[in-house]
View 1 (cartoon, rainbow, N blue to C red):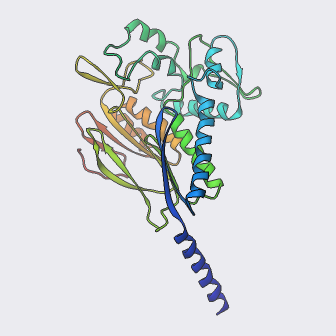
View 2 (view 1 turned 90 degrees about the vertical axis):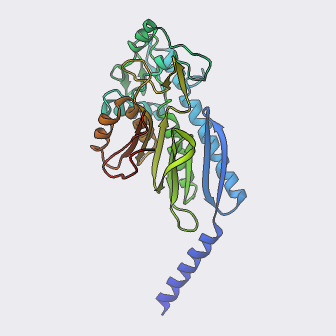
Length: 329
């Protein structure tokens, strides 16, 4: 009887605690992108404190990886390209090291040194012309993850070619989402979703016990969702060419650059990746654009705990082996 009473009190406490929790949400712009942070907390005061801590963490990460901030470690590494190694923090060193590992895994479809060619393209609507072929060729010559030089004893990074650059446009928001999730979990937040402009990292469940749901936007109609998926303790990242693109001779050129050619990838308009970490999902969603549907889906089917949904130019849907969905949008 005593054991039952203790169990009943434990159940009652858990039920009361669950009822005391509520969902709080805030939207803001960081890292040049829209962020939506949803978390479970006791009250608005606690939620505001946690959200401010999360924003501070995103600001810290941006100061670390930004290639626009001349004071960042990343900018210093890029300025010293072809000159000398740069001693960096363990955090940046490890991030670049992991990025190189993903580049090797994808055979260069994702490459953290793509940044030199990325800077010569304009996808903000201010240009209707592509860069000259000779300029593209010159920048592609400076791309190559295999050229990165790591010194673990000095914690230094070296780009051996002048003009070579590292950039985190294809992995940075995912990394930020993971870091915010980790920070909030350490502060006792039992559930939430960090949405970094399509790079989402989720954990726990809603106070009513229901699983978080993520909707995948129809790339041919951004006002509609073509599929819903439950997510818990995993990340999901969607990359698409429907927000940033360049129109040349009535042909759309998406913002995701093929590091091997220096030109925008073709054939895919949307790619969603489910993975344990947003950092990995972010990089892989970019890589799949470059790989194309057939190679991309075959690649994902060889990985553990990773799934993908790809949509081609015709609106046809392709999925990895453990996902079932309608064939067209």
